[in-house]
Length: 96
Image 1 (cartoon, rainbow, N blue to C red):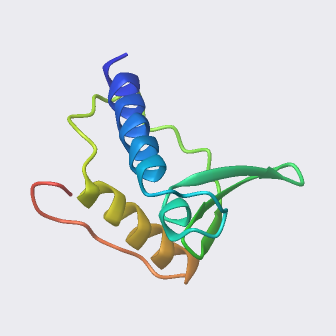
Image 2 (cartoon, one colour; image 1 turned 60 degrees about the vertical axis):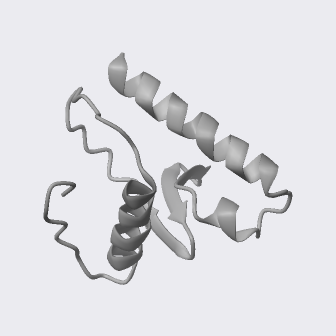
């Protein structure tokens, strides 16, 4: 339940930021920077910025989350973008 609350609080903060900055089009960069899920032709597609990958349906268990920060969002953008280009990433440090 705690992880769900953390994710919902992050979603609330992102929505407040997009509203305050006047995001109104699907091509606005602030919208494109969000991790988005689409259902297309019997597949779940994950999109963020200009990257698009097939959802892997990997279950990692019900782990707790401390916080989601702007650095977390940046890591999502970087890692999904790398995967989209058939590359990889190796986050390290206290956040990775």
